[in-house]
Each structure stands twice: as C-alpha cells, then as structure tokens.
Image 1 (cartoon, rainbow, N blue to C red):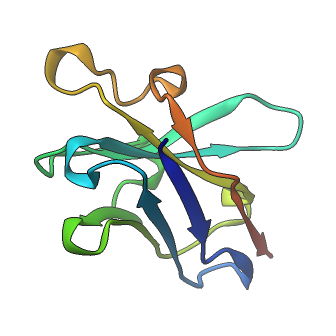
Image 2 (image 1 turned 30 degrees about the vertical axis):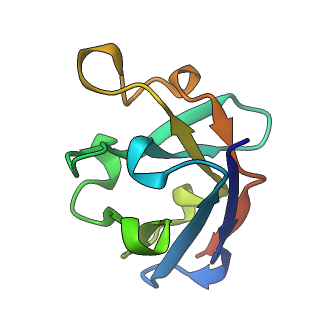
Length: 126
C-alpha cells in the first residue's frame, strides 16, 4: 500500500554533495514518520537520519552538520541533502517509513520502519 521510490544517488568525489529524494505514494504522506537508512556491503542496515510527522529531526552522530533531512508534504517527498561527503559514506541508501510516532517510535532503530524503498547507491571516491 505504501510505495517509496528513491533517487539522486551517484558517484562523487570526497567533499562533494548529493541530494537524495524519496517520493511516497499509497498513503497520506503527512501521516508517516520517515527515515533514511544505509547499508554497507555485507552489513546490516543502519540508521542515518529521521524526521517525524511534525518535522522533528534525528541524526546519526557522524553525519550531524553534514546531512540534512527534510520533507515536503505538498509534494509527498522526503529529502536528504548530503554535503561534505566522505568515502565512508559509500553505501546503498534506503528511504523508509513507519506509522509510528511519538513515544511509540524509536527513530534510530532500523527495524522500526515497516515500509522500504529499493535503495539508491551513493559512492564517494577519494
């Protein structure tokens, strides 16, 4: 019912920027809490950033000050602005959604999200 489509990944050099987008359909976007999750090769998916229904944001410590998560409810779209990219940011980035919010939601736990996109590859060269 909830469909997520990520785009915006690519191959860039260290220090460059990328902006990821995620278009949401099938549900009222404003009713969903959203997150960006990334996966390194051979590793489990890990939290990067999240935003609540009301716009509260949460970040992995290592991306604070470099990444910005935002949402445009009028366009049913989630964004991740990624600045000052580092080689260690190289991963597949997934858009994720959950109906949980408030005290029932733990933004940094990847398994808290029920809906997932197909992922977009971000590769940062040295």
